[in-house]
Image (tube, rainbow, N blue to C red; front, side):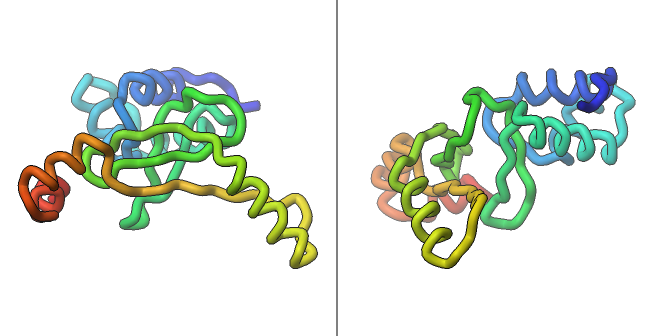
Length: 143
C-alpha cells in the first residue's frame, strides 16, 4: 500500500473537486493555480496510484489521452461519456460481462479483464445538435 503523502492527498482532493474526467496536465494546472508547488510527474504518479487502488477511474479519451476522475462506484463498472460536455454516467453492463467471459473462454483465456467506455452525446448535447440542425455546434463546442 502506498503512503498517503501530502502530494497524493492534494491530488485526491483536487480530483474530488473536479466534475467529470480530467487529464493529469489539466489537474496539475488547477493545483498550481491554487498555489500548490506539486510537480507534474508527481501528479501523474499519484493519479496512477489512485486508479490502481480503485479510488479513481481512468480511461483513454478518443484522442488517446489518459483521463481521470474520482471514483464514485466501488467494484467493476463501465461508463457512458458525452463527447461534448464530458458528462459521465457509471453503468453496470451484465451483457458485456457475459460476452467478455464467453469470448475469453472460447479462445482458452482465463482471468480475462476488460474496459468498456461508451462515448456519445448526452441528452442535453443532442438537443443542442437538433436545435442547431447540424453537428457543427457540437464540434465547435469541443474545439
